[in-house]
Amino acid sequence: MTNMTVLPEAAGPTAEDQEQREQQAVNELLAETSEVGRRAAEWVRELAARQPEAGHRTVLERAADAVERASGREVVPGGEGQLDEELAYDLGADVVAGSVVANGLPVLVMGEQIALVTVCSVAAAMPSSVLGDFESELPVLAAVMEAARVLGLESAGRSPR
Image (cartoon, rainbow, N blue to C red; front, side, top):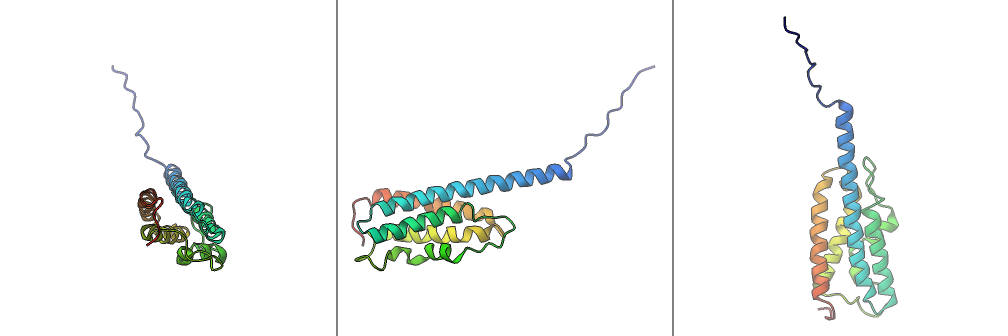
């Protein structure tokens, strides 16, 4: 007589396992969002540092802080997706005009102006994107950041158009 051992069927992933994988994916996405926002903010700070007018530097530094915040701690899965009024103001498209009390416009070439508005717009959309197609925003911001960095490096020392 042969002695046979019957093994139980391998159990598939449990609902708890699935939930943990989904939470891990969300956490990784949030970390990536925060990192992209940090890099975007770093680029905006580089633009700010180049400004001869203190008012323009301040406006761009506030925009950099807002980009970092909107891409980081403001992103709350399941949250309302709304920015507070001050943060939304700092990410407004008029950031390219700089400070109203400074003389003239910030020293930015056209490509930097476009990239700056795009970075601020995408960052402003980050908190609400968690509610929808969040993952599609990351490649957009990453591509804009790469283009902005290239434009910033290529335009160093050139006057605005």
